[in-house]
Amino acid sequence: EECIPTTWDIFYEKNGWMLIFWNFAGVPFVYCFQSVYLAKVAGPIEHSTYYTIALYCVLVCAYYVWDTANSQKNHFRMQHQGTYIARPYAFPQLPWQTLKSPQYIKTERGSLLLISGWWQFARKIHYTMDLTMSLCWGLICGFGSWVP
Image (cartoon, rainbow, N blue to C red):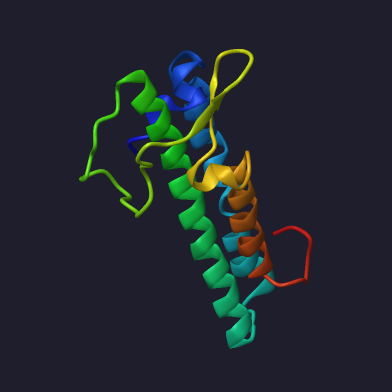
């Protein structure tokens, strides 16, 4: 992914050792809770078609906002550092990833806060969408247990 080099894990944390550790130790065990629960405990779960479609739509919309918000933030940083290069071949390419003439405010510490794009609506909108996607993954598992 093109925005990984500007993340905290890579930029400040010694070449991303925490990120690497999490990818090997956490991801295989934590990101599969819902699948393991459905396969081993719950079995097939029947939801109404409307419920499934609604969760799917919320999940896709949350993913779109999450991805484009992260891209807007990272492209904004790269633009101000003079390192932004348009990469049309990078994955994923979604509309509204790069803001033209982004608006920002300067904090007392001198850092810049993006106040256009998705960032005009919330300060941590990418975290909100991350939680929304997690909620969708849990809700599709039903209400038979608190685990998923």
